[in-house]
Image (cartoon, rainbow, N blue to C red; front, side, top):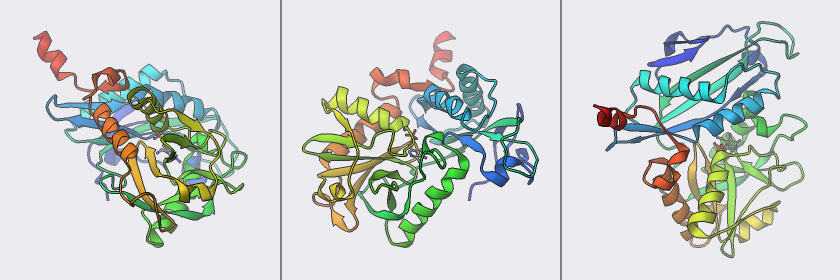
Length: 315
Ligand code: PMP
Protein backbone atom coordinates (compact mmCIF):
# COMPACT_ATOMS: atom_id res chain seq x y z
CA UNK A 1 0.00 0.00 0.00
CA UNK A 2 1.22 3.47 -0.87
CA UNK A 3 1.33 6.12 1.81
CA UNK A 4 -0.55 9.36 1.14
CA UNK A 5 2.51 11.49 1.68
CA UNK A 6 3.90 14.19 -0.52
CA UNK A 7 2.33 16.77 -2.79
CA UNK A 8 -0.21 16.41 -5.60
CA UNK A 9 -1.58 18.78 -8.23
CA UNK A 10 -5.32 18.91 -7.67
CA UNK A 11 -8.10 21.33 -8.67
CA UNK A 12 -5.63 23.85 -10.04
CA UNK A 13 -3.08 23.94 -7.23
CA UNK A 14 -0.42 21.95 -5.42
CA UNK A 15 -1.85 20.40 -2.24
CA UNK A 16 -0.85 17.69 0.25
CA UNK A 17 -1.53 14.33 -1.43
CA UNK A 18 -3.72 13.34 1.53
CA UNK A 19 -6.05 16.26 0.70
CA UNK A 20 -6.44 15.42 -3.01
CA UNK A 21 -9.89 13.82 -2.66
CA UNK A 22 -13.00 13.65 -4.82
CA UNK A 23 -16.67 13.22 -3.87
CA UNK A 24 -18.20 9.75 -4.04
CA UNK A 25 -20.69 11.31 -6.47
CA UNK A 26 -17.97 12.12 -9.04
CA UNK A 27 -18.89 10.88 -12.52
CA UNK A 28 -15.43 9.34 -13.09
CA UNK A 29 -15.62 7.39 -9.83
CA UNK A 30 -19.05 6.00 -10.71
CA UNK A 31 -18.63 5.35 -14.45
CA UNK A 32 -14.88 5.11 -15.13
CA UNK A 33 -14.80 8.31 -17.18
CA UNK A 34 -11.19 9.36 -16.79
CA UNK A 35 -8.23 9.44 -19.15
CA UNK A 36 -4.89 8.78 -17.54
CA UNK A 37 -1.20 8.49 -18.24
CA UNK A 38 1.69 6.71 -16.58
CA UNK A 39 5.08 8.35 -16.82
CA UNK A 40 8.30 7.12 -15.32
CA UNK A 41 10.99 9.22 -13.78
CA UNK A 42 14.44 7.66 -13.43
CA UNK A 43 16.83 8.81 -10.74
CA UNK A 44 20.42 9.34 -11.82
CA UNK A 45 22.40 9.27 -8.58
CA UNK A 46 25.64 10.79 -9.91
CA UNK A 47 23.76 13.76 -11.32
CA UNK A 48 21.16 13.82 -8.49
CA UNK A 49 18.62 14.19 -11.24
CA UNK A 50 15.20 12.73 -12.00
CA UNK A 51 14.73 12.24 -15.75
CA UNK A 52 11.12 12.00 -16.91
CA UNK A 53 10.93 9.74 -19.94
CA UNK A 54 9.18 11.05 -23.07
CA UNK A 55 7.13 13.46 -20.99
CA UNK A 56 5.76 15.55 -23.87
CA UNK A 57 4.65 12.45 -25.80
CA UNK A 58 2.64 11.27 -22.80
CA UNK A 59 0.84 14.61 -22.58
CA UNK A 60 0.23 14.72 -26.33
CA UNK A 61 -1.48 11.35 -25.98
CA UNK A 62 -3.48 12.52 -22.95
CA UNK A 63 -4.73 15.60 -24.80
CA UNK A 64 -5.70 13.53 -27.85
CA UNK A 65 -7.44 10.87 -25.78
CA UNK A 66 -9.37 13.39 -23.69
CA UNK A 67 -11.39 14.13 -26.85
CA UNK A 68 -12.77 10.59 -26.74
CA UNK A 69 -14.61 11.37 -23.51
CA UNK A 70 -15.33 15.04 -24.36
CA UNK A 71 -13.05 16.09 -21.52
CA UNK A 72 -12.09 19.73 -21.87
CA UNK A 73 -8.36 20.20 -21.30
CA UNK A 74 -7.51 23.91 -21.49
CA UNK A 75 -3.77 23.20 -21.14
CA UNK A 76 -0.86 23.06 -23.57
CA UNK A 77 1.60 20.18 -23.56
CA UNK A 78 4.26 22.63 -22.38
CA UNK A 79 2.17 23.75 -19.41
CA UNK A 80 1.45 20.15 -18.41
CA UNK A 81 5.17 19.31 -18.63
CA UNK A 82 6.01 22.30 -16.43
CA UNK A 83 3.39 21.31 -13.84
CA UNK A 84 4.94 17.84 -13.72
CA UNK A 85 8.55 18.92 -13.25
CA UNK A 86 7.35 21.33 -10.55
CA UNK A 87 5.52 18.47 -8.83
CA UNK A 88 8.68 16.33 -8.84
CA UNK A 89 10.70 19.21 -7.36
CA UNK A 90 8.09 19.85 -4.66
CA UNK A 91 8.27 16.17 -3.68
CA UNK A 92 12.07 16.30 -3.74
CA UNK A 93 12.28 12.71 -5.01
CA UNK A 94 15.64 10.91 -4.92
CA UNK A 95 14.36 7.56 -6.24
CA UNK A 96 12.81 6.18 -9.42
CA UNK A 97 9.23 7.40 -9.60
CA UNK A 98 5.95 6.88 -11.40
CA UNK A 99 3.83 9.90 -12.30
CA UNK A 100 0.08 9.55 -12.76
CA UNK A 101 -1.74 12.38 -14.58
CA UNK A 102 -5.51 11.93 -14.73
CA UNK A 103 -8.14 14.00 -16.55
CA UNK A 104 -11.61 13.08 -15.37
CA UNK A 105 -15.28 13.93 -15.51
CA UNK A 106 -15.86 15.69 -12.21
CA UNK A 107 -19.59 16.41 -12.47
CA UNK A 108 -21.68 14.98 -9.65
CA UNK A 109 -24.67 13.46 -11.40
CA UNK A 110 -26.57 10.24 -11.74
CA UNK A 111 -26.54 9.16 -15.38
CA UNK A 112 -23.77 8.17 -17.75
CA UNK A 113 -24.09 11.01 -20.31
CA UNK A 114 -20.85 12.92 -20.85
CA UNK A 115 -21.92 16.35 -19.57
CA UNK A 116 -19.49 19.29 -19.52
CA UNK A 117 -17.25 19.46 -16.46
CA UNK A 118 -13.81 17.96 -16.01
CA UNK A 119 -10.74 18.35 -13.87
CA UNK A 120 -7.14 17.32 -14.00
CA UNK A 121 -4.84 15.95 -11.32
CA UNK A 122 -1.27 14.65 -11.10
CA UNK A 123 0.34 12.62 -8.36
CA UNK A 124 3.68 10.85 -8.21
CA UNK A 125 5.00 7.99 -6.12
CA UNK A 126 8.33 6.16 -5.74
CA UNK A 127 8.34 3.02 -7.91
CA UNK A 128 10.73 0.22 -8.80
CA UNK A 129 9.89 -2.69 -11.12
CA UNK A 130 6.20 -3.28 -11.99
CA UNK A 131 7.01 -6.79 -13.19
CA UNK A 132 10.27 -8.60 -12.49
CA UNK A 133 12.69 -7.58 -15.24
CA UNK A 134 15.67 -9.58 -13.92
CA UNK A 135 14.34 -12.91 -15.12
CA UNK A 136 12.23 -14.17 -17.99
CA UNK A 137 8.49 -14.11 -17.27
CA UNK A 138 6.22 -17.13 -17.52
CA UNK A 139 3.03 -15.94 -19.14
CA UNK A 140 -0.28 -17.42 -20.21
CA UNK A 141 -2.92 -16.55 -22.80
CA UNK A 142 -5.91 -15.10 -20.97
CA UNK A 143 -9.42 -16.47 -21.17
CA UNK A 144 -10.58 -12.83 -21.07
CA UNK A 145 -10.79 -11.06 -24.43
CA UNK A 146 -9.52 -7.55 -25.10
CA UNK A 147 -12.13 -4.79 -25.21
CA UNK A 148 -12.92 -3.87 -28.81
CA UNK A 149 -12.50 -0.40 -30.25
CA UNK A 150 -16.26 -0.03 -30.69
CA UNK A 151 -16.89 -0.98 -27.06
CA UNK A 152 -14.23 0.88 -25.05
CA UNK A 153 -11.27 2.05 -27.18
CA UNK A 154 -8.06 0.59 -25.75
CA UNK A 155 -6.04 3.40 -27.32
CA UNK A 156 -7.88 5.82 -25.05
CA UNK A 157 -6.26 4.85 -21.76
CA UNK A 158 -9.71 5.21 -20.22
CA UNK A 159 -9.86 4.39 -16.51
CA UNK A 160 -12.97 2.19 -16.82
CA UNK A 161 -11.29 0.10 -19.51
CA UNK A 162 -8.77 -1.15 -16.96
CA UNK A 163 -11.35 -3.51 -15.50
CA UNK A 164 -10.42 -5.61 -18.54
CA UNK A 165 -6.73 -5.38 -17.59
CA UNK A 166 -7.49 -6.18 -13.96
CA UNK A 167 -9.44 -9.33 -14.89
CA UNK A 168 -6.68 -10.59 -17.19
CA UNK A 169 -3.80 -9.76 -14.81
CA UNK A 170 -5.58 -11.35 -11.84
CA UNK A 171 -6.53 -14.51 -13.70
CA UNK A 172 -2.92 -14.91 -14.89
CA UNK A 173 -1.54 -14.65 -11.36
CA UNK A 174 -4.26 -16.91 -9.92
CA UNK A 175 -3.21 -19.49 -12.53
CA UNK A 176 0.46 -19.26 -11.53
CA UNK A 177 1.64 -17.05 -14.40
CA UNK A 178 3.49 -13.75 -14.09
CA UNK A 179 1.38 -11.98 -16.71
CA UNK A 180 -1.30 -12.43 -19.35
CA UNK A 181 -1.31 -12.20 -23.12
CA UNK A 182 -4.75 -11.02 -24.19
CA UNK A 183 -6.45 -11.92 -27.48
CA UNK A 184 -8.99 -9.80 -29.34
CA UNK A 185 -12.42 -11.23 -30.16
CA UNK A 186 -11.02 -12.38 -33.54
CA UNK A 187 -8.59 -14.66 -31.68
CA UNK A 188 -5.45 -12.74 -32.59
CA UNK A 189 -2.98 -11.27 -30.16
CA UNK A 190 -3.71 -7.81 -28.80
CA UNK A 191 -1.25 -7.07 -25.96
CA UNK A 192 -0.52 -7.78 -22.30
CA UNK A 193 -2.80 -6.63 -19.48
CA UNK A 194 -1.14 -3.19 -19.42
CA UNK A 195 1.79 -3.49 -21.79
CA UNK A 196 2.51 -4.03 -25.47
CA UNK A 197 3.83 -7.28 -26.88
CA UNK A 198 6.69 -8.14 -29.23
CA UNK A 199 7.98 -11.43 -30.53
CA UNK A 200 11.16 -12.19 -32.43
CA UNK A 201 11.35 -14.63 -35.31
CA UNK A 202 14.34 -15.15 -37.57
CA UNK A 203 16.04 -12.05 -36.21
CA UNK A 204 13.08 -9.74 -36.90
CA UNK A 205 10.84 -7.97 -34.42
CA UNK A 206 7.09 -8.40 -34.79
CA UNK A 207 4.43 -6.46 -32.91
CA UNK A 208 0.67 -6.16 -33.21
CA UNK A 209 -0.67 -3.26 -35.32
CA UNK A 210 -2.56 -0.26 -33.94
CA UNK A 211 -5.86 -1.77 -35.06
CA UNK A 212 -5.38 -4.78 -32.74
CA UNK A 213 -7.13 -3.03 -29.80
CA UNK A 214 -3.86 -1.95 -28.26
CA UNK A 215 -2.74 1.17 -26.49
CA UNK A 216 -0.42 2.92 -28.93
CA UNK A 217 2.47 2.58 -26.53
CA UNK A 218 5.29 5.06 -26.19
CA UNK A 219 7.68 2.31 -25.08
CA UNK A 220 6.57 0.29 -28.15
CA UNK A 221 7.68 3.20 -30.33
CA UNK A 222 10.91 3.53 -28.31
CA UNK A 223 11.69 -0.16 -28.86
CA UNK A 224 11.21 0.08 -32.63
CA UNK A 225 13.50 3.12 -32.77
CA UNK A 226 16.23 1.50 -30.65
CA UNK A 227 16.00 -1.75 -32.61
CA UNK A 228 16.30 0.08 -35.92
CA UNK A 229 18.99 2.63 -35.08
CA UNK A 230 21.09 0.71 -32.55
CA UNK A 231 20.71 -2.92 -33.70
CA UNK A 232 19.75 -2.51 -37.37
CA UNK A 233 16.56 -4.55 -36.78
CA UNK A 234 13.31 -3.54 -38.46
CA UNK A 235 9.90 -4.18 -36.90
CA UNK A 236 6.98 -5.84 -38.69
CA UNK A 237 3.59 -4.47 -37.61
CA UNK A 238 1.11 -7.24 -38.37
CA UNK A 239 -1.50 -9.51 -36.79
CA UNK A 240 -0.06 -12.34 -34.68
CA UNK A 241 -1.81 -15.72 -34.41
CA UNK A 242 -1.91 -17.52 -31.06
CA UNK A 243 0.10 -20.44 -32.44
CA UNK A 244 2.86 -18.08 -33.56
CA UNK A 245 3.52 -17.41 -29.86
CA UNK A 246 4.60 -21.00 -29.39
CA UNK A 247 7.04 -21.06 -32.29
CA UNK A 248 8.66 -17.66 -31.64
CA UNK A 249 12.39 -17.47 -30.86
CA UNK A 250 11.94 -14.75 -28.23
CA UNK A 251 9.22 -12.49 -26.87
CA UNK A 252 8.92 -9.57 -24.47
CA UNK A 253 6.45 -7.08 -23.07
CA UNK A 254 7.13 -3.38 -23.01
CA UNK A 255 5.50 -0.42 -21.37
CA UNK A 256 6.17 2.45 -19.02
CA UNK A 257 5.46 0.25 -16.03
CA UNK A 258 6.77 -3.04 -17.42
CA UNK A 259 9.80 -1.42 -19.11
CA UNK A 260 11.33 -4.23 -21.22
CA UNK A 261 10.17 -7.48 -19.65
CA UNK A 262 11.51 -10.61 -21.43
CA UNK A 263 9.24 -13.65 -21.65
CA UNK A 264 10.65 -17.15 -21.06
CA UNK A 265 7.57 -19.27 -21.62
CA UNK A 266 4.02 -18.94 -22.95
CA UNK A 267 1.33 -21.39 -21.82
CA UNK A 268 4.12 -23.53 -20.29
CA UNK A 269 5.95 -23.82 -23.62
CA UNK A 270 9.50 -22.47 -23.28
CA UNK A 271 10.79 -19.96 -25.82
CA UNK A 272 14.36 -20.88 -26.71
CA UNK A 273 16.01 -22.13 -23.51
CA UNK A 274 13.34 -20.46 -21.37
CA UNK A 275 15.64 -17.62 -20.33
CA UNK A 276 16.11 -14.06 -21.55
CA UNK A 277 16.69 -14.14 -25.31
CA UNK A 278 19.76 -12.41 -26.81
CA UNK A 279 17.91 -9.68 -28.73
CA UNK A 280 15.55 -9.03 -25.82
CA UNK A 281 18.59 -8.68 -23.54
CA UNK A 282 20.24 -6.17 -25.88
CA UNK A 283 17.07 -4.10 -26.09
CA UNK A 284 16.65 -4.21 -22.33
CA UNK A 285 20.20 -2.91 -21.75
CA UNK A 286 19.79 -0.19 -24.34
CA UNK A 287 16.47 0.89 -22.86
CA UNK A 288 17.89 1.02 -19.33
CA UNK A 289 20.81 3.15 -20.51
CA UNK A 290 18.56 5.50 -22.48
CA UNK A 291 16.08 6.15 -19.65
CA UNK A 292 18.84 6.90 -17.13
CA UNK A 293 20.56 9.40 -19.40
CA UNK A 294 23.56 7.19 -20.17
CA UNK A 295 23.11 7.27 -23.96
CA UNK A 296 23.36 10.96 -24.67
CA UNK A 297 22.10 10.74 -28.25
CA UNK A 298 18.65 10.04 -26.83
CA UNK A 299 18.68 12.87 -24.29
CA UNK A 300 15.91 14.61 -26.27
CA UNK A 301 13.60 11.95 -24.76
CA UNK A 302 14.51 13.00 -21.21
CA UNK A 303 13.21 15.92 -19.18
CA UNK A 304 15.41 16.75 -16.18
CA UNK A 305 13.44 18.04 -13.20
CA UNK A 306 16.10 19.58 -10.95
CA UNK A 307 18.85 20.70 -13.36
CA UNK A 308 21.28 20.94 -10.44
CA UNK A 309 24.29 20.69 -12.74
CA UNK A 310 22.96 23.63 -14.81
CA UNK A 311 22.43 25.65 -11.65
CA UNK A 312 25.92 24.71 -10.37
CA UNK A 313 27.51 25.72 -13.70
CA UNK A 314 25.72 29.08 -13.54
CA UNK A 315 27.11 29.86 -10.07
N1 PMP B 1 -1.03 -1.26 -23.13
C1 PMP B 1 -1.76 -0.89 -22.09
C2 PMP B 1 -3.14 -1.42 -21.94
C3 PMP B 1 -1.23 0.01 -21.15
O1 PMP B 1 -1.95 0.39 -20.10
C4 PMP B 1 0.09 0.50 -21.33
C5 PMP B 1 0.66 1.53 -20.39
N2 PMP B 1 1.05 1.15 -19.19
C6 PMP B 1 0.82 0.05 -22.43
C7 PMP B 1 0.23 -0.80 -23.33
C8 PMP B 1 2.21 0.56 -22.70
O2 PMP B 1 2.15 1.91 -23.09
P1 PMP B 1 3.33 2.92 -22.79
O3 PMP B 1 4.56 2.32 -23.38
O4 PMP B 1 2.93 4.17 -23.47
O5 PMP B 1 3.43 3.05 -21.32
